[in-house]
Length: 269
Image (cartoon, rainbow, N blue to C red):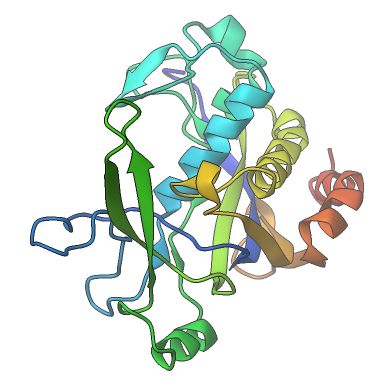
């Protein structure tokens, strides 16, 4: 991309709420040090002590589910985990995950990530509701789980924190960028088509779980009150074009093709 011109053609803004259908555990730090302490605490805003959903957790989970859905090789270590990352420009050109979520900066053939995911704070109404409940912990319930040693039959209890079922996080926001360039590295029409990958990732998350302890009942979530809007480069600061509002993700998926068509029409693609 050296020497080429590369710019933002448009941004698609995806607003939403996340409803916890079962208890939600996204881990924080600390706990379990003192006798009777919590073994697994939830992450909290250090200023308000309210739980929230980090954008990194939401984005990382969606990416992980899409990697499995598209059967992509998990070939690159990132911290203590592994992700998929294309190794050459030919595979990157047609990769639905790397095109949307990006590749490490040291890979010179890639563009920057197209998807930005913000932290999702606990909704004010849910905050007030949880403050009024007789919970064991601030904004959280405690759940004791017991593992049994298969050899000695000894019980090993541990206590975890969860945001109770029914809590609502939002408003949340994801921003999807449509790029353009003068050398064909970025193609707006293909970027618009790949917006469906984000919608698919959201649906995969609803069918899986967010946070930890999902195989034991935690983390079932649902996207609601979804809004889609567009800002074009040509009149970016003057106008935002609404593309639709949807009560549920199923409603959005039923109109997926129509939304992509509207974006293409607005961008004359």
